Length: 254
Image (cartoon, rainbow, N blue to C red; front, side, top):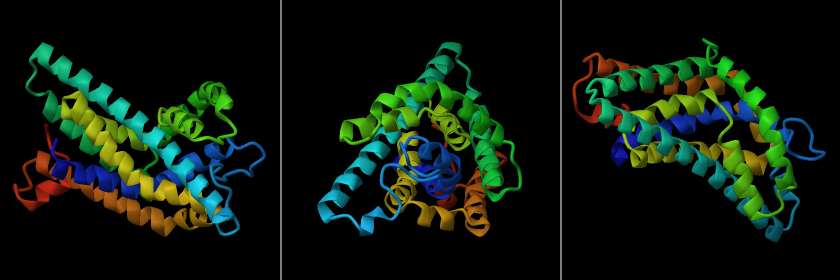
């Protein structure tokens, strides 16, 4: 999977990260002792303007460490998915598995786009599973709080990345499509880096930014962008797209 093939995954992560605002905002708020509901606990809302620069720098490093742990967990999941798929295909000598995985991956991206726009809520079932798993993961996270050191922030992000999420699962199918551990890890890295700007900004800006990003028009526009990537991929699968510059906008087979 070359760098050009990773472009749509980065874009899906960037546009789809508005979903993280709604999905993770309330749960992350529960991680903070005494923090108000739906407040990112890494940096208190509005604190950046009032804190000395040294403390702002320290808190920023903590946000980065948390997100580094989260993206590392995505890469581990992608490596596992890609490696298992590649091994199974090799053992079974199944030549058609990539076509099926390609169809499923782009179908899931379409589902994610519809979910973000609010036109179809099928992926909400995955979110419900995530809330059930959260109750089992919470005891593992308790020793990491308060998140006052970089190792704690990284470890908490690493645990958080395993929480089931419809958006993450959509991209994991693309990691499966890569057919190798390295390709799967690269796919999830590109996706994780796409989510980084939004979650980094949320960690520093808190509730003010979160309110703006939850506006229906913003979510709908981002959902339409994600939907377009999925539709282009399905059109290419069906033979409706010629090879050329549009290939850069489609999830490619390994």
